[in-house]
Image 1 (cartoon, helix red, strand yellow):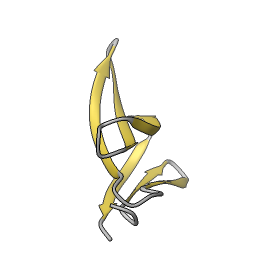
Image 2 (cartoon, one colour):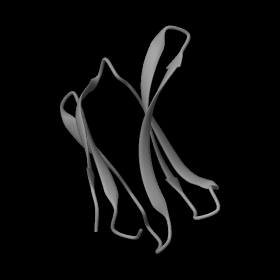
Image 3 (spheres, one colour):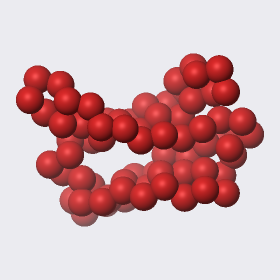
Image 4 (tube, helix red, strand yellow):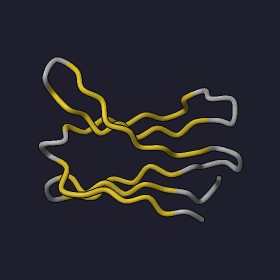
Length: 69
């Protein structure tokens, strides 16, 4: 939903991924790849097409939070 966003605090800066258009969703998941755990934040359409994706190594992530509109 437009206005939904996820803020990720990575060491000393905040990165924000937001739903830019009505009907899009923002979701965060963790994935393990080659022994590294990633926080993956995606903005997607209602049909599931990924518009934006941001990946952060979990060792660098201090905290993350989702805000709903």
